[in-house]
Picture 1 (cartoon, rainbow over the protein chains, first blue to last red):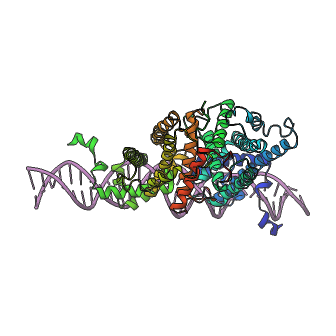
Picture 2: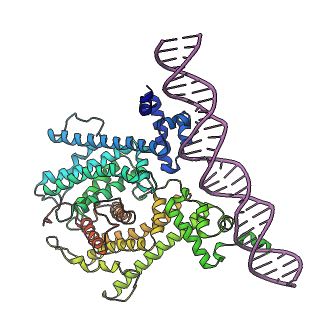
Picture 3: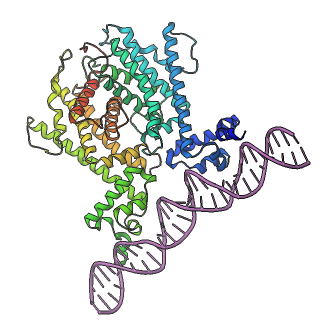
Length: 264
Length: 264
DNA sequence: CCATAATGTGACCAGGTGGTCATATTAGTG
DNA sequence: CACTAATATGACCACCTGGTCACATTATGG
């Protein structure tokens, strides 16, 4: 018993789940409101309804606690993307009206229908299938992001804070987790898109990913934070408006801003 | 004398310019390193080489100091954009090889040459002149932004911090200053672009501005902060690489990502 | 029921914060 | 020079921070 004590201690994971939940909720709330440095341990223990000593028995210090919370975030992201991936695969397996992934992508589903409509004057696309698939998939990623924010707004806030706070403890490692991951996802998608001829191959992959990432990121940030792009206030708009915006943005990404036979 | 004292006090602006400079530099440095809340007044007065009491004689509190500094930033931005505008006007006045605006837009100048090249397979553009002008102008805005960051990296950092810090005192008003302003600039540009037929008019203006703003903003953020888009590391790249990236991004914005006769 | 081990607790610590104010210093004027 | 008004100063304040640790409380097993 005595020698185990060194390693085992009172691990956080041994606590009753409801207590874990309360602590995590308190920490997530505080970190999402104030970022890493300005977040107060005192506030967290108060909100969690435990004493400071206890918290420091579960987590050696503030940094460990924060990393723990952030890792829960990356876990959530990975789950969401995995679900998204599974949904895509399921969609590929059979036509479209499957029962797969109910709940998880009820919003993303909205993407699939409209792809081929409203494509007048720009419609002689050689290998239509794969091209539609690419931008449709991009759209689904975006909608999955929206869904994630709806589900975990505070976790997303924490992510944003890490992104733009300089002195978060393991900042680079933490971001690398989720960014590397996003590149793992976006990279292959774009590469496949180029190979299948869905997207042009005279632009370096890195640039393609950059533009895609920039646009989607900003879209999600606007949706989560509001007040960024006050002209199209994503935060306030309802599902339909949101979907319309997404479709428009995808069209621009696909066809460009220049007017060449696209005048109405 | 006594009644004036209430209003006049020892205004900051009455100080010898070099002292002003030192204080401003100290404040800008501290705020750029730590944002608003985490910035330390003690550090600022130490760096500025004055006593805390003096600082509080010039600025009633931390908030006033910060707003003062941020307003210097918006001033710098307005100056930069005004210069950029003047350069564009000067360019329109006579052919191209003028002596106007030396120094101010030495980088932006690089944009003008290459617009018409490498446009095979996509080249029957009706009103070529105005279209080239639009994307060329967008490019110049981007390069002006890069130049601004080169000149005032710390001010730009402060701006980024305000963007992503929730509890900055007058956050919305401050951002409105510089954002409204950016919309004042981008709005007319895009509108003119649509009217002149340079860019498609089947997409709402707000969406056009959104995509433009998102891409340019992210580009500048990557350039200023690094580590955002590790694949194309803008912070580390030299002038030529940077220019190449800019041109590529403009091409994508113009022509889109889809492959329609753009395969190499 | 007790002895012992494990866990919870909050007063306490040093250090830092924004902000104040009595006092020292300087500048201006007759 | 002297007297006064303007300015500079930093010790000091109350408050908050992350972190510690001696002690109280609880759980366990004999």
